[in-house]
Image (cartoon, rainbow, N blue to C red; front, side, top):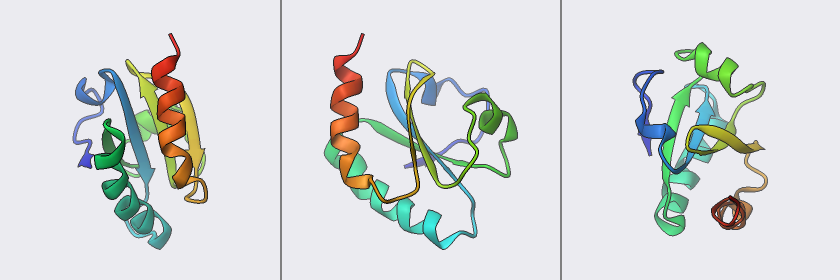
Length: 102
């Protein structure tokens, strides 16, 4: 997982990606990040991290109102949101659904 360093970066807006919106000092967020780093290799899409305290404009753009939130993007457009870590095992199914949509 690569952290977003500029809010206007185009890299995380290309193709199908997932952005993990997190708070640096949250134990839940740290646990999710660890799980996502393992999952990223399995599912074949790129995961990005976004500290909500550093990139308020992205938080507003993707209407993030809780953390951690995993936002799935397709060419920069939000197509699915997953809040918390309870449904992490469903990520492969979510990605299959996104890949199948036009």
